[in-house]
Structures are given as structure tokens and as C-alpha cells.
Length: 393
Image 1 (cartoon, rainbow, N blue to C red):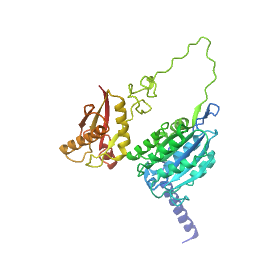
Image 2 (image 1 turned 30 degrees about the vertical axis):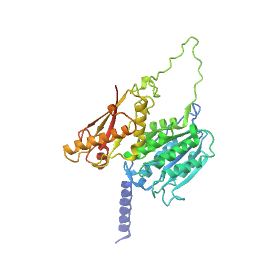
Image 3 (image 1 turned 135 degrees about the horizontal axis):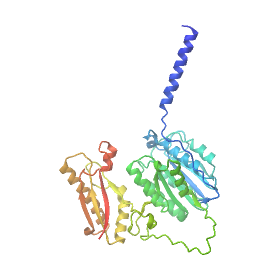
Image 4 (image 1 turned 180 degrees about the horizontal axis):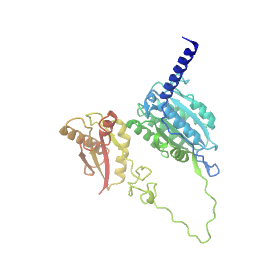
């Protein structure tokens, strides 16, 4: 074989290898162009922030075509590129973590230091592997210590899938809130779509009282991330415009039901007093999920159901219908009884919390009203549920 032939074969081999490598690189995120805030129009809403990043084993799972770890790192990177150049102190702590990071189950890998986009990006890029359990509660406790020296307002941002955490993170978030009081707000960013993980992340944010929970998908776009960064980090500087001499004072927006959403934006008027609402002003009620062929209530839902009972006690004109459902497995008669048992289980829980029987009704729909596909385990898990539907007398 001639040298010319050998060169040709080598060229073909290298070309095939490059094509193969390129084929393995899946583009999972649309190109991102960070929103540029005009710094003369905003001032910091917080003085300090800490990002608590999930690097536990479950973050190796795939979501939207890539590892959850990579998706989470990309989301935090987009946040980092969107935060404007104002005076913040920042920190980054991981938990779980593999051999690429030092420490036991949680490590602080950046700050608390004067915030720098470049330095935070450098720290973020060291998170390349996963490992271990999900000691989110331990990480929250450690973050409380990281913030001891912080002066002023604080934002704690937890990024993870919420899986296999138990209830420890909620208790740790409560302790953090008690430590810093009104100075602290807690925000959570859910990676993936695990139902129990979503509930855990929502309850952690609720413990902060002034924060909120979002999914990573909601803030992945340029506009979504800009909205998130503005709500967490920024306050608009009021424009100094003198009103016209004879102009009447603008009427104050009304919030008739006192839920924090103005009437012209409120999609659910007459929300019960004290109820937590979403951005549309609608009461955030839990959906209780059940294991296959079971109707016992998992402890994950106790906190949310206790809150429902408190709201009902404070609103004596409120009734609640409990609607039980099943997945598509099992016969029609079996599923009907099972769905009714699931509805009654929630009713009994609320009765134990002091809600009168006559204020509660139950109904079973068997498998006739799925909210997700019954062709997958994940879809069936969402269909095994009891929904709470409030009404007035």
C-alpha cells in the first residue's frame, strides 16, 4: 500500500470520528442572550445571595436530553450572566457532590465575597460530577453559617431536583428564616419534574415567607431569566417626574380579597383570607398523590393539608370537595372504590384537624379523569391523586 493510500485512509478515519463526536453533542438549550439591565434604573433589592447547588447522585439522571447537573449548571450560568453589575456579596455551596469537589457532603466553593460574574462562573465550572445522597438539609444549615457575617438583605437560592431529601430541608429552611427573619427570602429552582421533589421545593420556598418556587424550564429563556433576576435581586429606581399641576392623584389599585394581587389582575376573586396564592391570585391547594393501590397519605402532604385546615377554620363559610382519582390499571369497580377511599382519606385527615364533617364532601372518579398519560409510570403517578376543590356556602 502506498503512502498516498495510507494518507487517504487516515483522513477518512479522522473525518468519521469527528462526525461521530459531533452527532453525540445534543443541543438541549436554545441560544441564550442575557437581558441587559440599565443600572441607572435599578438598585439592589438584596445585599447578599447564596446559591445552594444539588450535586447529588440523582442529578446524573437525564432530563430534556441532558444530565440534570448540566442543565442546573447552565441555568445558574444564565442567572450569573443576567445579574447586573451592582454591589452584591455572593456565595456558592454544593451538596451531595462527587470526587471533583473537596469536602464531605457539602462544600462552599465560592464566597461569601464581593460578587464577580467571572469568579462565580469559575466556581460553577468546577461542578462537573455528582455523588452521594441528597443532604439538602445539611447544606441549608451550613449556608446559615456562611451568612452569619452578612449585613443587610439576603436571598437564598436552592437549585436541585428535590428528590430523596426527606423533610429535613424544610426544617432547615425554617431555622434559616428564624435566624435572619425579615432580612431573608428563600427561592427554589426545580430541575426536572419529580412530583414529590416539586412539593419539597415549594415548601422550602414557603418557609422563607417572602420568596417563591419556579421550575428551571420557566426561567431558561432570556425573558424568563430576566423576570426571575429582577424579582430576586432588583428594585426599580422610581423616576423623578413632576406631576402636572392640575392632574388628579391616580386611584389606588384595589385588592378586595387581600391576597396581594390587584383586582384587575386577580383571576380568582374572593380568595379565602390567609391563603397562599399564585401569580394569578388563585389559592395554591395541594394535590395529594398516592402509591399504587393505596390510599394512605404520605407525610410529605401533612404540612400542606394542615395549612388547608387552618384556612378553613379561619373562613367558616368555606366548604371543600375532595375528588379521588386512580390510574388506568385495575377494573372499573375496584378503581371506583379506590378513588372514593383516597378522597375519604383526605377528608378524615381534615376532620382530625378540626374541620366539621358537614363542610367536607367526597367523590370518586376512578380512572375517568386523568391529568397525564397512563402509558408511563410518571404519568400514572400523577393520576393517583386526590384534588381539593373549595366552594362557599
